[in-house]
Amino acid sequence: MCSIIGYSGQLTLAAPLLVESLKKMEYRGYDSVGIATLNKGNILVSKGVGKVAEVDQQMQLNKLPGEIGIGHTRWATHGGVTDTNAHPHYSCSANIAVVHNGIIENYQELKSELEKEGHIFKSQTDSEVIAHLLERDYEQSNSSIVDAMTNTCKKIRGSFAFVAVFNNGVIAGARFDEPLIIGISSDALFLSSDVLGFLKYTDKAIFLDNGDIVIIEDKKYTIFDASRKNVNRPVTQVAWELGSADKGKFAHYTIKEIHEQSSTMLKPLEPSNDFETFCKYINNASNVYITGSGTSYNCGLLGKLLLSKFARKRTEVYMSSEFQYFSDTVEPDSVVIAISQSGETADVLHSVKQAKENGAKILSIVNIPTSSLARMSDCFVTLNCGPEIGVAATKSFLNQLMILYKIVYIISGQNIRFDSAELVKLQKSVQSVLDLDFKIRNIIGSLDHNVKDIYILGRSIHYPIALEGSLKIKELAYVHAEGIAAGELKHGPLALIDKESVVIVLNPNDETYRDVLSSTNEIKSRGAFIIGISDLKNDLYDVFIELPKLERYLYPIVEIIPLQMMSYYLAVQKQLDPDYPRNLAKSVTVK
Image (cartoon, rainbow, N blue to C red; front, side):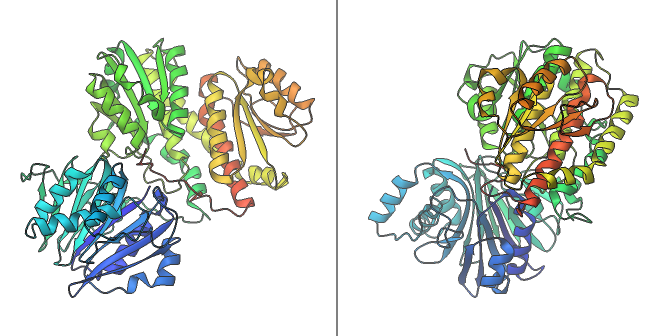
């Protein structure tokens, strides 16, 4: 959600580099874009609503002169989606321009105070407050940028990562509960919310701590803490993320990443992940809590069922947006397993911070080992699935599942089969389902293009997959979709079923099979169109998607794939962009 890039160097002119960097971070989600460059002591700003390429074409962003600059893609929180509300924002004198991620909770109070002093605001955003605060504090501190940055940060309540360019050639940044990273090369320095913003130029990065302030001047950087004390932060090499983000032969990143699952699914199980320590924490805990948002929450639901059923480990799972209200009650001898693809999800970080302060051990499952969540955890394991550009999680979800199965395998004393031989078979099974691409595309093509309601039924370990499948349909195709526990049909949802309904039934031949068939009969008698996903064909299905034979507890790993594909092809059929769904962001860094 929102992207920041700052550049000072001699690699190239700033504007084309800023535009290119913002394109690399488009997956994070946004609705407007803008850049500011410094040229002969003047800060030039150009910005507008739309995609980076669109605004660049209309406004000629990449033509702005100057070798120093900042850029931003905005996802609207305060103020509508307008050119004026896009970042960067000027100070009154236009001697400072600012880009900001996060939310300033006391911006109305600060804005009123500044307006009384004569400051004139042009946007409806909370972010513009920072530019005016910096201007005032800079003047009051006899042009000390360190003092101005420190004093401004002290006045702000909320979460923030912001970068400011001053007309004297200095770039300054600060962070609190939002990511901000320094990129270091021999010819340039960068400030970015995401390493993908500068990885074309360097894989050396410094991840700023909460409260850090950085000043970039004369090809050097200096880091201060909130008390103005100089601090050193370690340089990290992040070369793993240099994996190709090219779409190759695929039309979109989303379908490419769906097809990558057979090749990435075993990567989190490699020796680089310390599962033994991770599981030791769980075994020694009196209580286990799992938290996550969206897809990660659905993964957590399945994790709870698997840990309870096979490892006999009582587990509670909470949406992070709800867990934050209860995390202060977590017992000191508990563990919290936090699941987050980005490791920067605001709700997750807030919940984990509270639980950690209460004495709980924090375990995390992340894709980015240098993320905020990983760094605040007692132990973490990584998805190792490489960059996921499509906003809707696909390969990251499958790798989350693989990690949870590995954890259950260890804790249960190998009560489930998840050894190397089984993994080879499982990987082949995933590929066999991916090979159904053409069939699934034709199934979607045969549906009414105006389908309004899709329901997905599942029981037991299949129910979380029904929820995840319905989430994918909503995210990508903007169709109302609902995951339903099949046994709950008669307790309300059956009233919704009619001849216009499409119902997808998750029904592998396990202990849930006959009960789900009974529910399918009820739906069939009401005229719904039924898509059966199973390893066993039945005449009740209007369309049948066949799964390979597997150990009964492993079916969630393969049955999610047809649902991902159906969601993708529904979006394509409706001429939507599946990579960048409207109103959504890859990394939700505001609450």
